[in-house]
Length: 138
Image 1 (cartoon, rainbow, N blue to C red):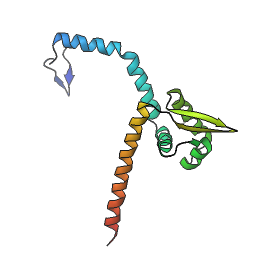
Image 2: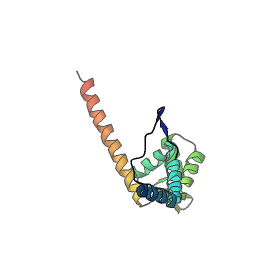
Image 3: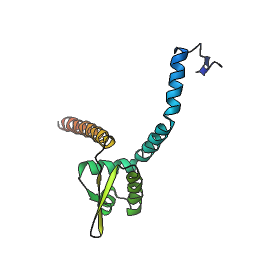
């Protein structure tokens, strides 16, 4: 086996035993499809627009495309494109009422994780605002 170079230096050897290395290689090969799917999911939700949509839907129970476009100051087609991608991963669901389609977050573990992350962001933002109140008052 060839020795790897890390930061211009040759790796002196692995720390894993041969059976551990074989087991880990096998697990990676068996998980290739899941890893690819997770990568696609992260690419989908990793855009700023997609995260803004998911954030809005975590605040409001449901919104139509026009409302999201107005709030995000974007065109309807850009929002619709993101919603279609989010729908493919079952992150959002839609319900037609008359001529209007309303979107909401689907109940799943990934969205629960996102809500937790958004709560952390809100908490940090709130703390930052509280600090700025104290620093601007003299």
